[in-house]
Length: 611
Image (tube, rainbow, N blue to C red; front, side, top):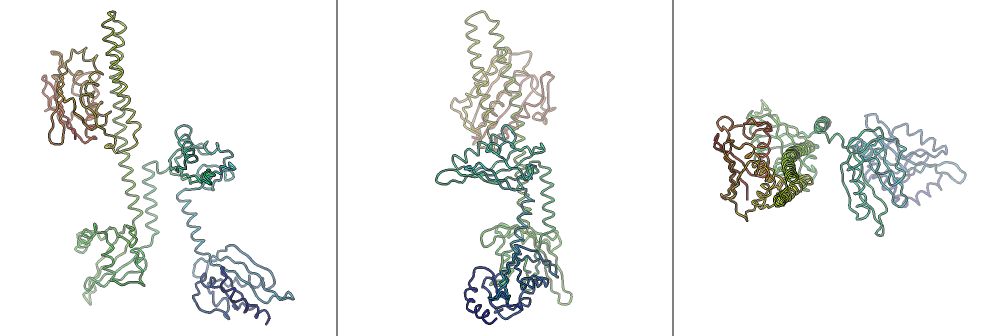
């Protein structure tokens, strides 16, 4: 035994610097030596534990751990990569160990070599990570381009509703789960760009699961290159199906926020109104990023300095209203931490008075509502995008149904004229008109295509400079047959150099709608005359579009002229949509439209465009 202790003493320096939490015990479980990392891992500080009983030093280690020591002292090694213990006070302790008996030359056990690591924090992080993956429905994947082998984490299998033993067997199999067509092509193209150019991707697409369900997923991927060659692509796959449905998204977000708020910790504080004395608990200090041990300023001053400059005045006013009983006792505000991070907080306060000392205090709780505020912002942005997209779809549907119908009618009539005409000169004139009509149709289709291809919901980014007179002539050519049929006359007084910034498809639709309305509702007692003039007023171009048609009873219909499904004449093809769409399109481009009209005299539309 003495030689054993002597050997340990010789090796104590070596053990002390060993980069593992190791210790040696004698047969009575008395510490003989230990590494610095052992003290650090078990939070023993710098105290000397040599000569102390193991269970006196590590009091959190359960008493039944002694049975493991007893087996080891019988010559049986013990190893465990992680075991969970529930302590008497309800706390959880995770330990990882490897224990070997220390034997003399005669094979007698005289002590133990113990590697014991407290892995509680690591296990908690692992559990949180797993729970986060479960909550966010996110998994990882990779494709080794050298071996063509694919690896999915279990969550990816779960999202795809495939057995855990399943993985794509070929490179092409990695794409068969994506919905055939646009979604599959988008991911194939993204993967090709990543492999060829190293371009990462982040796409939201539909996949067909193993049970035939179609769900939305978010897939992110990037490429890894070695010596200029792409050796693998890897990334994440997240189930975002619920977030594609606004109602489900709202309910889910609300429920998650409610659970988070219920389970979240809150800070408490107290403020003496008379002398400014402030008391915060540890959680409140944590919310404000304050280290109590390093305080060099009053807590009230720290609170005031942390407040976002834009919120300071409002918060003080609201607190005064709460104090005077004119507002509910909660105030929301932003704070700026030392690292520049902005945090949203909600404080609920109650004012109490000490009857004996007449001291009045504000007592309250503070809660971090940053997640809630970010979710609220995202929902508003989602609603705004949805509204803008719906407006765009409404305009597009009208332009397709109305504008293309006008072109089709014009082409049909010209084709009919051409078939019936015998005179060669007349045929040449009709062919010229037919050519102009097809060019006008091509221009309209091009503009409509621009609307379809545009993914930017900010309409101002789609506006370009257009020559107004060219646009008017293009529409006039489009309805040339209708003008001839009605024996109509156009008087156009527009500067040939006048350019306005508009969405081309919208301007085309507006002019076509006004032209066709003037001819459609022309007076039966006179040939239609359409007059278009312009003048500049400050930063606006005013376009006046007048006709001598049937006119509208302004007193009767003035408040609903631009309403949906509003008609003012008995024409069979009147649908009451055109003027509604026209106003919507002009307003969307930052302009305005108004009308003046008199029955049996005519109608004048005043259009204002920003220039």
